[in-house]
View (tube, rainbow, N blue to C red):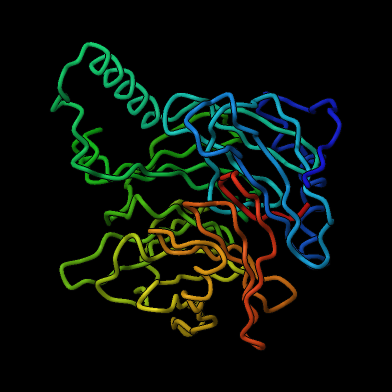
Length: 367
C-alpha cells in the first residue's frame, strides 16, 4: 500500500540566480555523491488511472526498487497537481525536468528537497499549443482538419535536460525536425534554454541530421544524445550535442539495421550510453565503449518471460537502471505500472514493483 507523506512547505524560486548559486551547487553535489553509495529510486510522474480526466493526476511519487532504497512509496506534494506533465528521459545531479508539449511552463525540480523552478515554453511549444487550440476549435465547429496544421504524421519531439560540465550551467534543449513539423523551412531547429541567462535562444547551426522524434534524448557526461532517422541503407546513428561547446556530432552507428522506430530505445545505465532493440523473442541491450568506438552486448531480455509479468506492449521495454551492481531494471513506457529486474547471472526475472490500475511516466534518480 502506498504511504503518503504529510504536506510540507515547498521551497521555490523563480529567480535566475538560484540554480546557479554556490549553495544550490553544493546541495546538488551532496546528492550526486550519493550515487556511489546506494541504488537509485524510481520517480513516477503524472500518476493516473488511465482515464482522460485531468483531475486524476498525481504529480510525483517515489517508487523504491533497489535493495538499498527506502521501503515505502511516497507521494511528493507539489503545487502542480492534476497537470499531465511529461518528464525528460534522464535525471541530472538529482534534478529532473518536467515539460508539456503545449503551453504549460516547464519545471526543473529536485524531488528530494522539493525545490523547483519554472521556465517558459520554447517557440516549438508555443506553435504546438496554437495548433492544438485551432484543432479543438475546428472539432467544436465540426470542421475538417486544416492542411496548414499538417505535421506529415511526425511524432512529437521531446526535450533533453543536462549540464555543461565545464561551466556547471544547466540547459534544456529542444531539437526537432522543423520542416517536417511545418514549424519553419529549416531541416532541423535547436532551441536552448540557458539557466545562467534565463532565456531561450536558437543554436545555429542546428543538427546535421534528422532525428527520431519518438525517442527521447538521453543525457550522459555533459552531452545529450539522440537517434537519427534511418538512412536509405537502414542505418541508425547516434547524434551527440556537447552542452559546453554546443556542437553536434555523430558519434557512432547503432548496432542494428532496419530497426523499427517502435522497437528501439536509448538509455543511460550506470553512466554508460546504452541502446537496445526488440527483435524476435529477445530485447538485446548494448553498451557503447567510447574508447574503442564499439558496442558490447550486456543484457538480453527474454520477452516471453517479461511479457508474462508485465503485459505485452507495442513499444520496446525501457531499461531504467542497474541495481545491485548487475541487475537490469526495466519497465513498459506504455503501461507504466510494472517494474521488473533481470539478473543475468541467475537468468531470473522478478516483478519488483507493481502499481495496479495506475499508469505513469518513470525516471530514475538518487534521493
